[in-house]
Image (cartoon, rainbow, N blue to C red):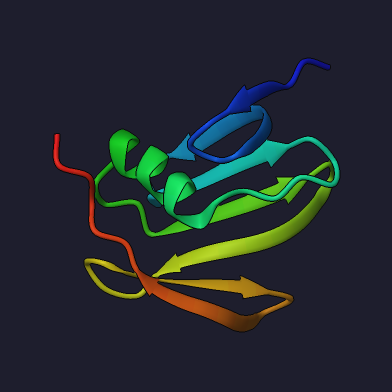
Length: 93
């Protein structure tokens, strides 16, 4: 299986998926890797400015889910527990 280094995510990525009907993204990383939250959100903002949730997998394990709380506020959760909330405005195109 091929993995490609992505400077925005700061890790190696196997694939991305997006479901437009529910505004949900998924990113699949090399086992043991973890993504940069801001980079991940910006990638999916670029796909759909209405993205609302992003699930990140390291190998086969779900490691973090990012939930959009408002236009610019995102919450990262692990095992259904919030552990980080930050403001991530869309990048200016």
